[in-house]
Image 1: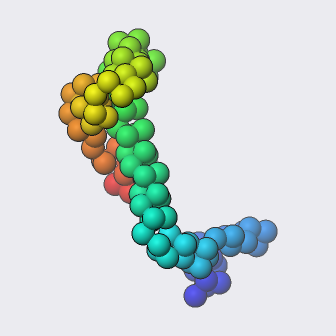
Image 2: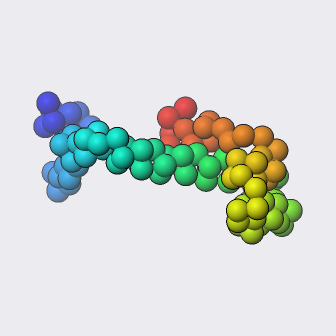
Length: 106
């Protein structure tokens, strides 16, 4: 299966498969690691959604959006629950759509 799929994709011979299904078995071997991996995915959702705020402003270097990020995310620490702080920054809950777009999945 692997060789025929790589041939179908036109994978150059000099590039070998470095990550096979067995390399990811640890993700599912314990609930602790799977939960940790989920945190990485959630961080990607937050990252993409927050960057979308800059793009939506029309200026990815928007001082206004940057100030809101500084005030409600980077400087707020434990002054309020993180979900409330994010809502204060973005005006809503984070949306997965932007991460899916970033990964080319939609």
